Image 1: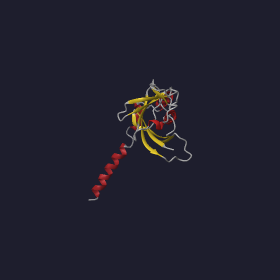
Image 2: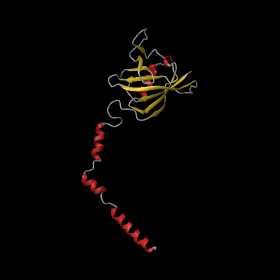
Image 3: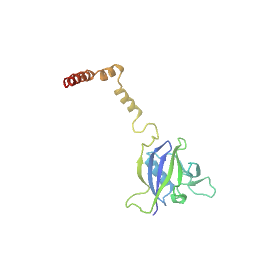
Length: 188
């Protein structure tokens, strides 16, 4: 079975990406679910893949809401279209847009093809994660209320800053410098 390896870049930061392996006969819907899981999105919104070129221009669309492929239809079905059906170049590219209202955009590039299926690996498979995934809603990981509590807890006023980081240790440094010069004068 052919294994296709793709790199899925977040458009806003090309240092944030996921490497995904998928079987050639799996559908774009499988690919869509894998990307959603890899970027920790909730999967409640529609999505589209677009065939693309080197400049990331969007071509033919594959949409999650289209259920059947029809001749001359504006979009193909993710459910019915296998990923390998649209691979025509060794560095095939796609643009993936999740949630049309927010337009989470990802650039996808084919980075490898293999015939060696890894035993017991469930495909599609997220092979590598780089960078912090964008937060789909608000701030990722910490609630806004918690951030405010942390800021208030560690908020130091001007008086505390002067007391806490003021002259501590400065007198000792001056004394050490003077004693060093006195000692060095005795050496001659």
